[in-house]
Length: 148
Image 1 (cartoon, rainbow, N blue to C red):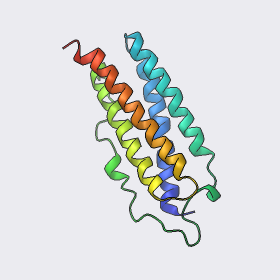
Image 2 (image 1 turned 45 degrees about the vertical axis):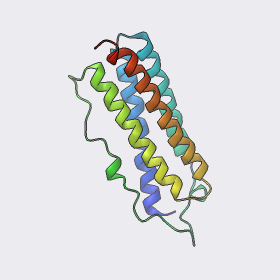
Image 3 (image 1 turned 90 degrees about the vertical axis):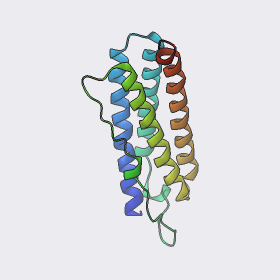
């Protein structure tokens, strides 16, 4: 297995677990039932993504003998600079969640570009992350922008 792709998948698995924990934590903190439900759904979906990635085998991945490997997966460009803090409010948590979903989609897009048997899996994961971002944006519009 291409080492760069292996590292990218391990990175993605870490990020999926972080996202799951983030959504669980914030589902317990927010008052809005709609945001609680959305974040609980997101936590479950991120756990499912982790499980899919955890069950990939070297044979599933591009980068074997004769397969072209991507030059740069640009993982550093996909990292969200903002960190979750104890003092974050719901608005900041939702903004951070949108940024995380955007970064996850970009990572899976890059992994899909590597081709191979997992291309459709990574394309599907990227689309899931874009869907999550859209769901959070919609809820943000309803909960935050409508109040202001």
